[in-house]
Image (cartoon, rainbow, N blue to C red; front, side, top):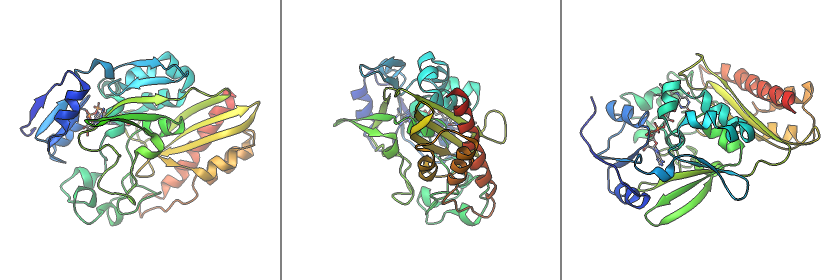
Length: 326
Ligand SMILES: Cc1cc2nc3c(=O)[nH]c(=O)nc-3n(C[C@H](O)[C@H](O)[C@H](O)COP(=O)(O)OP(=O)(O)OC[C@H]3O[C@@H](n4cnc5c(N)ncnc54)[C@H](O)[C@@H]3O)c2cc1C
């Protein structure tokens, strides 16, 4: 059963951030994550601030510099099927289309997808884990087959979002609004690794909301994709995934972003793989070497060494797909 809380539906962004600045207030967008967490007592809220009265937070539009602006309340379904997203930012369309299930994609928003809480069963269960205020990450010594092989420090949860690695690979930024004004943050700097602060997942402070996702103009010669590996065909989080964006002149790669999902507490930049790709064509050998380099630094836990092979496979499949469209 849901606990008792007050519910407000502001008509302006200013009113929304003022309401969110009171202690115990939480934003409510599609509600697919926050309502389940409140019901299951993962965390508490005394007030939900619905963003659903803010029409300006919906929809996809072109920006004057040739990029795209996606309002935070735009649903994952709208993003997955939007013609310009599919044409210029294929990794994002694929990631949004691979998240959760059709019903959840119709309800879940991009802002909520980026700000959703971890899916770790200890965090979601009756355990006072480090992220919930305790001093232990129970997954480290416990059931950890779905957990991190990279970047696990005080906490080995994996970041649950599919759109986050795609947006990181595409050099996206978000606008964050607070009662004091607004500022932009690149996706690279949006997620907080446990080594910096294991009690939060993003830089969004209480009283702030994400209002827009901004994609830069797609460079000439750019192509991108997202490959997700999961246990079931739908309604499942990534065991591993790879969002890849390359910019080619002719067939030669000038710029490469390889960002992994399902294997680290934040979208994980596979820098060694990126370096391996620069200056080369996507030959079988280069693809195999880059896929191998994507596993550099992996430190598997007791039950998740299988993820190392999944990383290799996801990167290999994503790069092979980009070779076919190049
Ligand atoms: C069964 C199931 C399977 C799923 N599978 C996947 C999957 O495979 N891949 C995947 O990526 N996701 C998956 N999800 C998560 C789902 O996609 C997200 O829950 C959804 O996108 C969240 O959007 P929402 O609008 O419903 O967020 P809400 O539930 O409304 O909010 C989620 C969190 O974000 C905060 N928030 C929401 N909007 C904003 C904003 N604009 N600014 C600041 N904070 C905000 C809320 O306060 C809350 O903490 C799954 C969820 C379920 C229930």
